[in-house]
Image 1 (tube, rainbow, N blue to C red):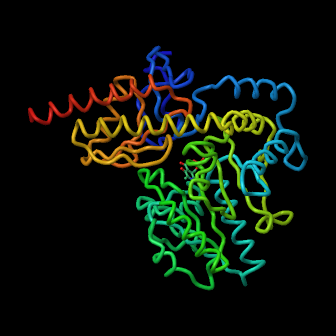
Image 2 (cartoon, helix red, strand yellow; image 1 turned 30 degrees about the horizontal axis):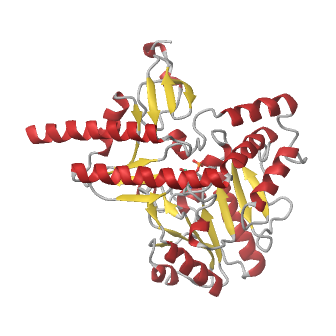
Image 3 (cartoon, rainbow, N blue to C red; image 1 turned 90 degrees about the vertical axis):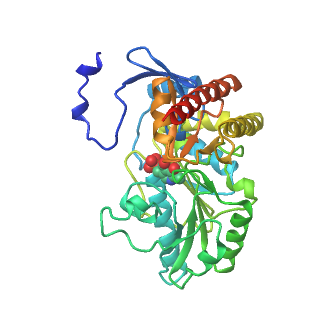
Length: 398
Ligand code: PLP
């Protein structure tokens, strides 16, 4: 199909997209319908943890699709039981509720914390969240997010989300009152530009929340499922939260998300939570295939090693071009460009067949497949080097 004949206008214009239509993906590569190949360091927005269309996920989907798609969320099915058990076996949590998107999982976490507050803390309902945080695009999760651009939108917001500063314990302490039930954060603020919470801050936050009888909710939608070299990033800080949400990588490319809680906190009653497609066997079969691959200790070790390699290559490139710091953990990394040139780098990279993301005007974010190879990393560094050299030359001429 020729680009000119695509019915672009039939889709709501919710973001600016390049004029290309993608038709195929394999590992770290995507192809558009003109046959152009792209090296992909966006991977569905940190979704395809095993790369595009990994055979284990394709096979699990094909096999499950021949057996059972959706019996009804009011009946048990095998894959959701197996996946819930595997997730609880691999984490500090005891129970799971499956959702279809990260935002929906976070809505569930917010509801669970409020329910816990109603039952155990005289209807306390406030959840302290963080400036710069991102938790999704439903009304409650936009309200919980600390994204400046969301502030004027869709008023009135859902109340009850006072904002603290990341890595500043006193700013959290100041917001605690008898209305507070929980503190919720991403261990690394991804959408804001890859700003990690320090392990020390996470440990102190755990102690503070425990001392005040508050729940600690970690949104691991971007950091979970091996992205930072541990199955879940909270493990890097050596803490045990009360609630965790997962999304993105958990389905390896299909819409699956999860809300996990400890037994003490898992207090939903019949009628409180549900959803037509939640925990359907097709998505859970994909989730099981992903978890089996990612939870292998040699796989997680390779994420750590590859992450350190990408980080050091980015640092060397940054030094060559006089750019700024490299932030992040594992394979969720950002390069500070020190100048608002990220959008033009992303556009030039697209032309050169490389897919990159710019969460801020001065920041590039890299979130490749967790099984990305060193050759693919070398290729992205070469491509970026070439773009930065061209841009540097153009700036000198101007
Ligand atoms: N939480 C975090 C940390 C995210 O990065 C995202 C998506 O980028 C979400 C929540 C929302 O997930 P979804 O887009 O699947 O609703």
